[in-house]
Length: 526
Image (cartoon, rainbow, N blue to C red; front, side, top):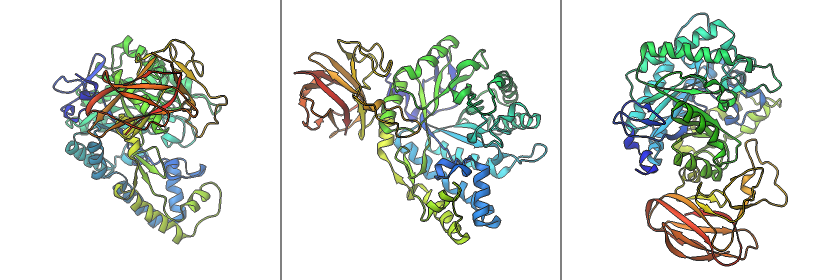
C-alpha cells in the first residue's frame, strides 16, 4: 500500500478511530489526513483582513465594522460574511484538489450567547450542519475545532479573549460554558460520521512571553481535558478526539497520561526548518503512547517550505492540515481574496489613522463580501501543488528524501539542518534577512553533489508531459545524471532545461553527480 493510497478520498468512509499509531476508517483501512483549515470564517482574524493592531481579533473587528458602517449595517454584515466566506463551492474545490479533510475553527460566541448562563445560538449550529452536508457530498472529513473557547484558552488574539489571558482556566463561568458547549456539540453530532473528530482546544496556554504568565495553569489544562472528555463521552462514544499541547501546540508536557483510547496527538509547526527535526519530538511521544499523530495546523510560509515539510510528514505516517484555505491578498494560500477598493483606508484606521466616511466603509465592506466568494478570488495553484508535491511545484535541492541521499561529507548548515545526512549543504556567505515572521531562510542553502553522490526526491501524480528541471546555482559548472525510478533520463548541466518524466502516481527522481562538483538550488516539477 503506497502513501498516496492512504490519502485517497475513497478512504472517507464511516467513523475514524485510532488503531495504534494509525488512524483507520470503519473498514479498518489506514488513512492519512490531508486538508486545510477554514480560518477567518467562524473566528475572524485581523491579519487575514490586513487589519492593523486595533483589529487583531473578532470582538474588535466587530466593533470596528459597527463604528465605520453603523449598527444597522453591522447587524446584517456578519450573517452575510458567514454565508459567503465558506460555501459549498469551497468544499467541493478541496475535494477536486484531492484533500480528504477540513478543520473547522469555531469561535464560541458563534454558538453561544455571551451572557449569564448557558444559551445556545441555533443559527450558528445550522452553519455547521450545512457544512457537514457539503462535506458528506464531497467525501471530506470535518474536524470541529474549538479555536476560541469561552474566556479564551490561549491568552492571545487568536482565541478572541478580552485581555490576553486564558480565563477559561480561572473563571468558573467560562469553564462551565466550555464544558456545556462540548456536551452540546457531541450530542448534536454523535451520529454524523463525516465529523472526523473533536479538536477540544486550539493552542492552549501561550508561552510566558512578557505578558501575564499563564504556563502555571498547565495542571488546569489537564483537568479541563479530563472534564471535557467525560462530558463528550457521556453523549458520544464513537468520535475520535484531538488533543493539543500548550505553547502554540508545540509543548508535549500535557501528554503525561492516556486521555482516551480513541485519540490523536495533535501538534503544530510554524517557523521551523522543514526536515525530520520538525517531527522527531512528537514521533517519539507517539511511540511512547502508541497513538497516531496529526500535524493539525501549519503553514504561513512559502510554497517550497510546504513542499519540504508535508510530504515528509506523510512518509512518516503523519497527516497535515494547512492554514488557511483563503485570506486577503496572499501568495501562500490556495485562494487569495482581492483587496476591495479603498481598503488601505480600513488598514490605516485600524492602525490609528484617519477614519473613512460611512459611505466609503459600506462600499468597501460590500465589495469584501463579494470578493471572498471563491469564484471571485485569485487562485494560487502552486500552493496546493507544493503541499502535495504535484506538477507545478518546486523542491529545494536540500530537501531530498530522508535517507534518500549519498554524500561523502557530514557538514551541517545552520546548527543541524539535515544533520547526519552525509550531504554537503552550503550556506550563503551572508544569510538573508527574514522576509516575514515565520521565515527561517532555509531556502538560501544549496546542495553540493560530487561524482557518484546522489539525492532523491519523491514526486506525485506525474502525468504524460510532466517534466523535471534541475536548477543550478549561479556559476555552477558540474553536471548530474537524472534518473526516474532507476532509469536514466539523461545528463544535465546549468541551463539544460526540463527533462520529460514518465507518468506515475508516485515516482522517485534521483540526481547523481556526474562531472565536477554540482551546486544545486532546486528541482522544478512541471
